[in-house]
Image (cartoon, rainbow, N blue to C red; front, side, top):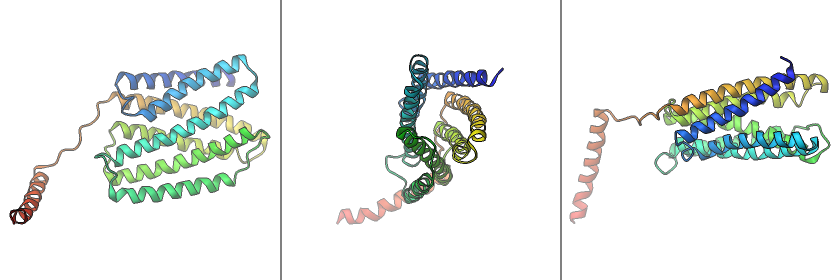
Length: 257
């Protein structure tokens, strides 16, 4: 199999994989539970169909502009997905966990500042304004998403996230995929043009294999039943009951007055 045929096969496999992930979300009624993740996967399906149609009937310039334009939409949906994961992990009872909220804000500011500085230092090739802007935003998105997922995964340990849950499976797969995309972004900025093109091609194919593995993991995770919330032990229930009774006894004399 030639390199071109392998690329086409990976492209087709990624499309089928996205269809299977979206079908799993629909079959298990998870679309309403994870609307941002469902939108991201659905966008991947529609983007592949749209780009294939454009490549078959229109000029390369139209394909290039459409590709980078959809990449910007994809980056925006990924940010919505990060918020969706954070909300499900740290806002389980309708309000953000107080001990986690300040850490989330600090990590968000640090991540945005770090990604913005690294993006400002980049000078991607190209004379087309849309293409250059899209490359810079794409670089910013990859760096920001990777940093935010690191923060989410680290803080989730503190919050006691059940790593068998669906949200944990989605977050883990996205984190792996985001980190795998960093070498491609770095390779696109350094080295000679010819060597850089060969390296990017190989890294892109490796990233496609990683994405296929992430798709398989998402399907497996979403097919599993959501684990039940951890129940309190008898000792903890007794402590909560004693605390509740103490609070009631403390306020009863005041109410009688």
